[in-house]
Length: 428
Ligand code: AMP
Ligand code: GLY
Image 1 (spheres, helix red, strand yellow):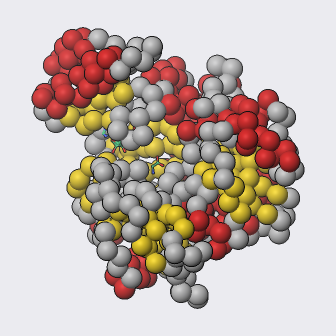
Image 2: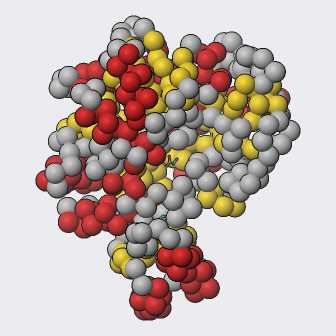
């Protein structure tokens, strides 16, 4: 069969590559994909990820068996709905079900209604009321803009000035932007603990565990600097074992998908549960309607089963066989352009972006474009690529990845040097 993956980053590179490993799969197309994917046999298609008409036409012309959606933006723009309406097979939620990601207020209401553990919160459209609420409940406090905010919509405020600034930029400044929707903020209890991501493959009322990982969201080593899309990850998370996974499937995933069915928006595709493990137990920080990036790049290395077969089985209504490796760990480090997540340089050379054969390293590319020829690449984005490795231990995987990154240092780029450190500290 021929498959289509929508998206262009490292997550989509990893998904497309894994799908291509299946004996059932003849070709994997990726729209728009990136230039580096071609070296792994992925066929890139020059169609924008939000261009529903052209994507549907492509899938029909190429007789694509099913389409996998990587990012949330096309879901928000109704692209998965267009595929459903055209009678095409897709592994993705509808726009209505994806609302769990693009409306934090909707997600919060569902969590309250279906008794899913999460931080307490209140919703506001009025600046003064929000400010008065924060003065009453105290600091630190978390302020979240409703809607897709590309990682910029969350402020953890430790003093009142920070809180007021966040509220005014989200509520007052937003209302000047001429959008016809009222700006909404969520003011949420600050949760202390460690963050992990748990994924599930969902088919309406059925859910199957699809990996656990710990991302590193701050830009710099030791969790310093601004929030980013994610600077590195590892899987599994040795200090959070089967118990946390079972608890998440039972107390979070099951009630959520049953709730979505009751609300008339049954969920299909990958569900992302962002959790804080607190002293009082697990609490949901966020839901996303997709796999994580960079978590996917490490999680899929742990999967011992055929990903294309799993998804085909789910789409045909069968129970899939999903086997995970029982030994070792997978770890990946993101290399980003200097300046990311703020303004960064672009256009500089990244070289050949090839890891040595037999090195057990993997490379998944994100913000890259064709360089001087088809085997050389230039920077075109904030997060550029991820280098990952499996290992018997975290230390072994770290050693492989970091020695490669040191040997191949690329000017104008940076990476965190502590990916996996929390797992090592937890062992002590
Ligand atoms: P989100 O966009 O919801 O993932 O939030 C971005 C980041 O803000 C998360 O990865 C957390 O590090 C942090 N965060 C969000 N909500 C909370 C919370 N209630 N307590 C503490 N930190 C939070
Ligand atoms: N790595 C965080 C995310 O994909 O949202």
